[in-house]
Structure formats: C-alpha cells, structure tokens
Length: 89
Image (cartoon, rainbow, N blue to C red; front, side, top):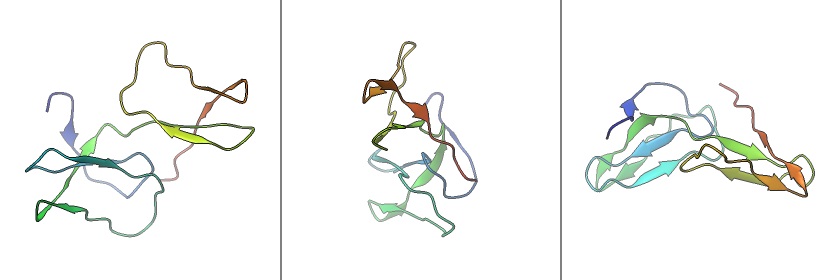
C-alpha cells in the first residue's frame, strides 16, 4: 500500500477505510461526530491517509469525490469551475 499510511482521527468527509482482508475501500461522504467502525470480511476496516477531495458546484450544489487525482483535474458543473468543499474537523 505505497503512499497510504494508517492515521487516527475523527469521522470526516473524504476519510478512507480499507479492508485488510479483501482490499475493499470506502470513503465517508458525510462526516459526523459518531465513532465509525466499518466492518468487512468480519474484520474492522483500517482508516487510511490520504483523505479524498470533495468538490461542490456553487450553482446546483452537486458534489463529487475524487477517487484518483490527476495533474489537470478541473471539475466543471453548470458552466462553472467547482470548488473544494471545506471539511469540518
């Protein structure tokens, strides 16, 4: 898992979890104050770094989450450049 290290922290937008058994991954799409402990393959999933970036459209409020970033990624919605959504830690 090059580039992905285990981290501790709160349940925040974009946080990534991975199953140590099958490699399944999930990402938080709405953070909260609860203690999230996702289970896969009968095993607790591992919280990873990095946190996925989320963009929001200022016109229609559509949101998207980046799974794999690229150098030239510039999401456009409603003919406007989307903005990175602020995370509340």
